[in-house]
Image 1 (cartoon, protein in one colour):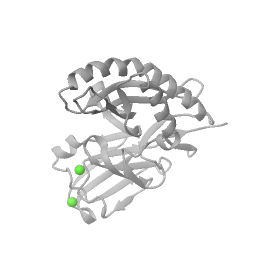
Image 2: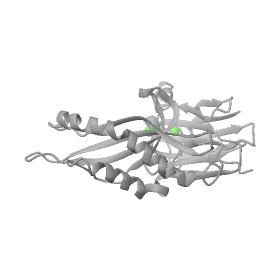
Image 3: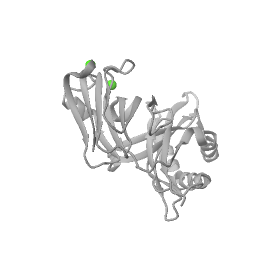
Length: 278
Ligand SMILES: [Ca+2]
Ligand SMILES: [Ca+2]
C-alpha cells in the first residue's frame, strides 16, 4: 500500500486529510471537489508519504488548479518520507494525484512535445492548409489529462493535444482566437508496439458575434480530421518501437519516476514505458 497525508500547517500541524492507495492503483485522484468539500483547498503546507512496498515506486503530485491543471510538484517515494514545508508551493494545492508505478525498473520516459514538437506542428499545418480561413497561431500543447468525466473517462490517463488557431473573418471583423482539441489514449497492440487513438475531440472559440457561424464551419472540419490525426500520430509512433514495451501510462511535464520534478501541465506530457527485451 501507499498513502499521502496532507497537512494544513508546516511540520504536520493543524488539520489533515489522508489519501490512500491500498490496492496499488496506478492513479488515485483527490479532486478539487473532494478537497474543497473538506475545506482543504489552497491550505496544504506539509505532507507525509508512506509505502509498505519498496519495490513499487510511488509518486505524489500536487496541482495548483482544479482538474489537475496549472503548476505541479511531483514527489517520489518508496518508503516513509516527510516533507515538512512547501516553500514554493505553500497553500496552493487544489488537487492531489497519488500514483503507484510499474515495478519493472526498466522504463523509458519520453516527453512527447520535446520529442516530436515540430513534427506535430508540421502535421497540423498540413491539415489546416486545406481550410483557407484558419491558421495555427502557436505551438501545439501536449497536456496530461486524468479526469475527462464529460466522456466517462474519469481516472483514465489521456493526452490532450491542443492546437491554438486564428480564424480569419471577413472585414470589418477581427480575427478570432480558437483552439482545436484532441484527447488521445495511448495503448499497446498485440506486438507490444505503441499506438494511440483519438477518444474525444472538441474546440473552444473566443466570444465574438461570429462565434455561431465559426462553430458551424469548424465543427465538421475538426470532426473530418480525426481519422487523419490518428493515422499521422500512429505513423510517428512507429519510430518508438525500439523496445518490447510491456505497458504505457502518462505523467504531466517532463517526468521522472524515481526523482522529484515540477513544472506546469502545459509544458509537456510524458509517456512512461516499461519494457522487457528478453
Ligand atoms: Ca497552510
Ligand atoms: Ca489552488
